[in-house]
Image 1 (cartoon, helix red, strand yellow):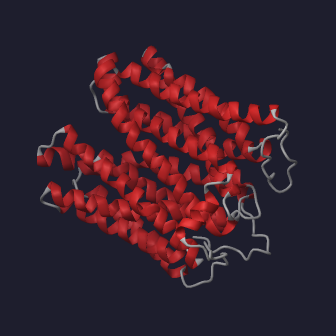
Image 2 (tube, one colour):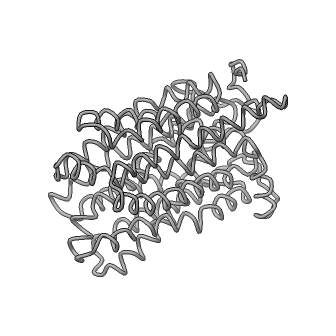
Image 3 (cartoon, rainbow, N blue to C red):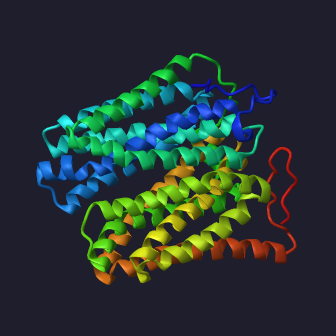
Length: 421
């Protein structure tokens, strides 16, 4: 693994493939392993959790809600603490050890209460790791294009989700194998981080307390569209996760486990295929136009998913996956680019926090809408939310132009000209 430490601020980093800092590629494997864990655990609900304890769907939902609550409770504090210390590597190392330990013990627990407690602790460690990985990526891309840097991180997320299902299939040999294999990989990444945690990171440690720090982050107008889309995008992701299996079973009469798994795989393949182009487009044209255009197409496709046949459904899942990357990369690039340099950890935590709020609302609202009006209506509502966000941000930009203030101009990537307003 390449060195993960940030280069000093006045020295341009060594560049690797695609003009991305060589050190940043070292984060890609670590990010893949973390999101492999995120994908594997839900896949093990049926064989290891639900069947063992005879749980209802409502009880099973806590398996998802508790990690999200952990993100809400601890993500911001951890992001701010890393800014305050001017270091991220020690916390990253121990967060990976935490994810590994909690993953390893899960299949051996004898009560669902104990499993929920461990799942919450897993969520705490995951909140630390996810927040600091993207903050570290922003640190390492200080002198290069934020779009391409965030694109390779998005690629790692997609790969992690794609291989989570095959790893979960190891349960056919022994139920605990997916947990132990994932824990081993996560622990190995933690050891690699720990070995490098003694080196200086050259970060500008903030001197602000947490409330003044938030008062520096939240008034930054360039961050507002990213936060809005971060919330809405996660709402739609929750809708897709919750509705796919139900819609295929009710609309197409296919109750197998394989069919929705293939549809979700199509989504992540589409996301992986579009990840690098999304970074190049963000650096070349600016984050805002790419995010707005992609979100509009994504919203239309998502709203139509309940009105097509099985072939169209598979196609729209892949298209939505591709445009999800074209939405996500520019939104996180906006945070990396416009957050105060000494508060990137806290800013990334705020972005993660609003996303988790959207995820929780998405699971709750989509479940209610689907039960009452059907999955097609729930898809339409999710897609409509995305289109409303596009209208709000696009309308705000138009009003600023009309009032002759002009839109906020993003700093171009090195070697690029500034995008036209």
